Length: 462
Image 1 (tube, rainbow, N blue to C red):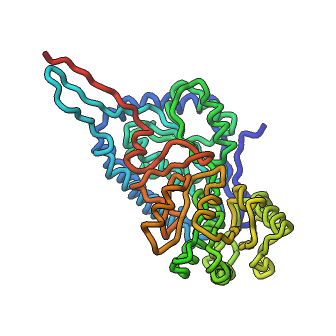
Image 2 (image 1 turned 90 degrees about the horizontal axis):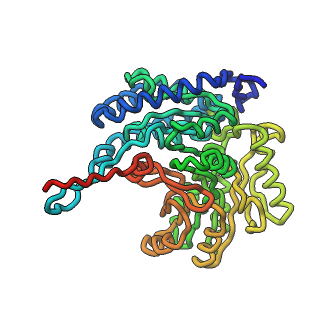
Image 3 (image 1 turned 90 degrees about the vertical axis):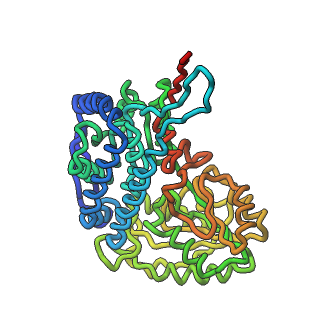
């Protein structure tokens, strides 16, 4: 069995990065080093942790042009958008650094005669972060930054599709002067990833990926009684009510469905539109989609890059073909996107109407540049269809009636609810999901609760 890991670029099928997988000895050394470093790191004042982590962000942002180009070659994001992920990473990292002192402060209880009582938040130990390729820096930093700020040490295993992301993060931490062993990464096989989770020094696992992979993570951790943060699948819905600002709604929803070639954790994958504006919505959406330029990610003119690999594109193509055979109407002529070819990562965007929940494209995660639009007659019908899913990551309603929108949002089975926006993470809000979208949360002050444990002090003074 080869000990090499090769990243095939979706741009041209070339071998872009080759790395050696960690050996058993290297894995053991890394974990031991992390466990040893954590003892000193947790004793480091939070202000010092903040200063070092802030320097890391500075060093990372200074390298944004190279990072943006690498993203294009590794996972297909158009270079014109690559630096946007750097900006998003900076926003999330700086927010989590800023709120750490308050989020981690000791809980002081009311006075009780003869006793001193308080609750401290203690670091867990070594946190193992397993990050995906689709937003490789944003998803990773969601866990890395609060874990470090809370006094944990971190070991990162990044996707085999985006190995340079782990290396760029490590370089930034090294430039900041982070103590040895506090942040490390390893390139690992699936089997060795499972072994790391089973190691006695691993105290918590943060994973972002598919439902099936999440189940494997749980299986690996079974019997260890450690914390798991799992962000898994999504089939996020949007509902466009009749009273909406239609131009704004179409612009926002279509961007939410097709940005990153639809390969977004919280991308819009199904749209429900009031019957009275359905046809107008389709017309406006079609015009926007036809304006996309499908091409290589390293071309500045490209607005829609290739999918991560040919098999992923062919999977979405099969959903589209099956839906059309079942009666769906396709609104985009694939011939208008000449780079779109079966057996390649290049796939034309597609908008489907006359869809139902009998079609896989409306129930099964697509993770590609396709979205179905279903006509609805009432709020009640829309809510029922939005909830008719095994997933519950985000959901959006577009309306001018904010009060009614909030009332409808209360009925939705989702981790995050939006009105008049979608496909965005506010780092001040808890990022979480329900049903098969996962468990636990990252970001916000609540994210710190996942990466620490309460320790109660009950002191009799008299």
